[in-house]
Image 1 (tube, each protein chain N blue to C red):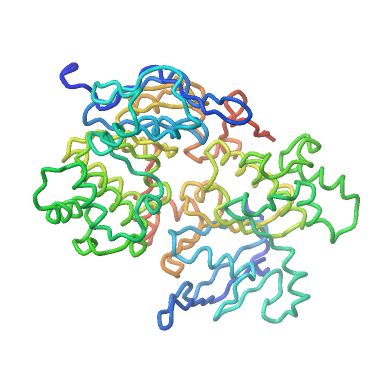
Image 2: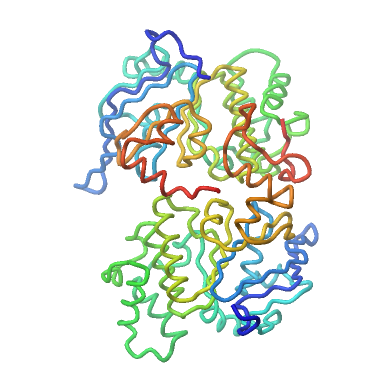
Length: 262
Length: 286
């Protein structure tokens, strides 16, 4: 289902040989990423799975330019991050938007939904009220007029996550990097948000890099999956293959640990 | 199991609980009846806000006294009616026969006290006959498969899984008949979760301890619990033997939960959701 481009085309996001080392205390080093390479092609959904401390979130932050890698290159939409001026980087970076785990922490509690969205819309001209409303309807908050003047605390967890997704869509991204977007959500909400993300992908042909610890979601949602362990990418391939018949012993162990329903 | 040979560790009879709030009373638990027999592993599942943690708190005597009120029904622990117990009496019960573990062990362990001391306190308090407390602490650490040198460790020096084991050792210090576990593995990685669940299974077998597991994770419930109660908006909507309930759920909500939990896509490539009547309140469905 991924709309793969011609084989010669460059991936939308290319992480090449990323190295990131954190200093812990005076002498201790944590090798968070040891030479990790990962591509995300246009229209593709890639899941990055692994346990806490595996480096998956660090890789997401490097891809977003929130962390400077100690080695390796990040290329997005044909541009090398390192070769850009700060202004060019900011411009390019709007094409890549994050969604984080905790929607409450990502929304300003003192801004209404409308104010949160306007903040993302100011750059591009057009009728702001109409665009706010359309964004909300796009993420299933209907009728939009009911939600525009609400504050985050007046929304349910699922609705807050939808507002975040709307704000992220306001930037018209090509790539959405979602770091555990569902781990706080109940199962019933989880299905709704995943369906929404699939709809968005179909309508707007965005790509996703989804960082998750949930194997069953990765298997069902992603085209390809990359498995990380202790700063290394141990296995990558089509999600059905990697998460049903894994090659690497760590992936096998991970799968065996997931309690299966029936 | 012989009929009524021993009083069950936990029996709840049409219990109702309400919370008072500035905007009026909220019924958190309505007419709930439950039974946990000796040595049995029982699950209480439901989504957030369904009232499952309120039941766990009630069964432990931990309801906030100023805001929560039992408006009806009874709570029996080992056959004794504890509905009207006073805080001092609850303190006795929490230790023996009741013990608890929660999702976040760090907030239940004292950060400035060594783990060994915390386990020792639990032993001293509820198992007064113990002559060699240190030996018992080492024994408990061994029981939860922590190395003996953990005795000198502080909670912050331990990993998440080790903390949960340490909290478990504190709980077991009182030789409980019933362990109430509220989302004990939710914050853990799957491989650590599998270890803790295996440990709980072993402990239940060797100590003959019953377990009431509060969980939103149906996979865990399927693997660990003999019987299950399903909660929806403050009521039990379905209960029975886990395998039977999951294989042929009688209530539409249970069926929806199970489908959604599998995180599989249906024929149209969509993820299963819980729609209509049982949708989480306030959720718009696009």
